[in-house]
Image 1 (cartoon, rainbow, N blue to C red):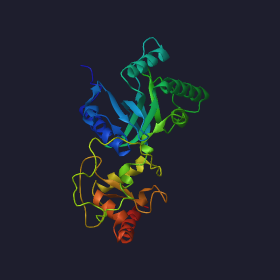
Image 2: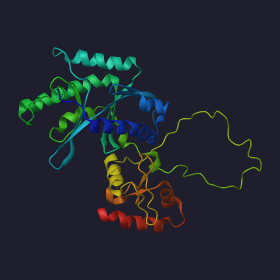
Image 3: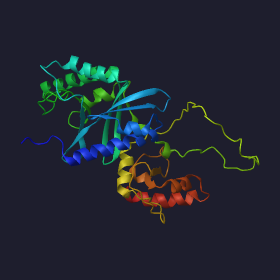
Image 4: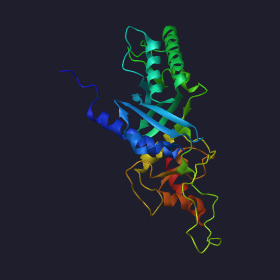
Length: 316
């Protein structure tokens, strides 16, 4: 009897990571169309997510999860995703292009390569469909150059990976291959966008009741229109966030709180000395939303942050 290609643990991990994708995108300013449907809209191992990105552009993401492999003490030393199971008769580019065209016919505008660390997403490479084949060809050429020059021990071309066209987001032993992707001007790592819950909402709005009318019935509006919102922030490293959340055991680290939740998206990672000072584990703590607001706005926020910094510095 043939060995099963996927085991139960692998399939369950994939299911959890796909479920975490929608909250991940929404945290980074994406307005996902039909979040429930997008989370479940699977075609084999494919997934399409329609959304407006953080700049207000309509996108449809063709999602592929990366496999990963450690090398010695280096976690996630290799990370890549298969574009398709295999090609026939060595006819690489036309068959890959046909696969991309089929995704485009289903509405996809971008390929999104997702790499997780536990249940957290730390790489999310967004690639316009028209750039997929040129990047794959570039990685194949770079891998062949490294192999022929003897610069790497690997003998099997990265991009061909036997008969399975593969795109690489990380390879510690052949970084030039992955850099073909990251140096493309239209490729973005969505994990590098600042999570919205790391920039507390309504930071410039006063909670004043002085100017409120006595009759509240006409406040607000029905069918409020969408408006573009442009924000800026300090780029965060998603692996720092993942490490802080994992180290806290998903509990609020403010003394006396200890709130615990076991689902993705609840906790904030607070930069005690602000992210401009350092996006490092020693400058970060896990906080529940209430404690995160206290750390920014409470009258005793300086004292709170002093205590949090002492706690975070244990990991410096």
